[in-house]
Image 1 (spheres, one colour):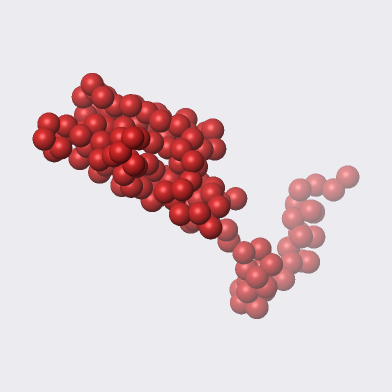
Image 2: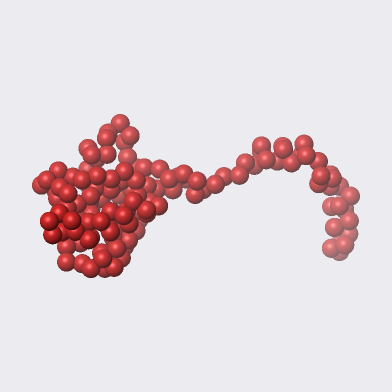
Length: 141
């Protein structure tokens, strides 16, 4: 039975020098580095404009404080992504005189969120300026 020292000696004597740049280039070509977080993709038919994609789920934030609304929106996005949804509707309300705090804060939150993409206001019957539809992005595999 060979000891570890014997195995190590045999391996070192059979190894090629580690400083060979050609070997390194071959290894990089053979085993390219893949950045799994580099791209986020939409799970939708790109031939349809986002406005025409069906809404998969809705959250209504009426009556929430800003911290409550942001926490609820984060949980809603997590659940929507876990369910594989493409498009969601976030109803934040218009606020007093159309200048609501939730409207501004929720929109800013959604614009900064790494897993949200295109967004816009739905038609009036779905909330108009008091809501946002949001396309969700997924890590490519």
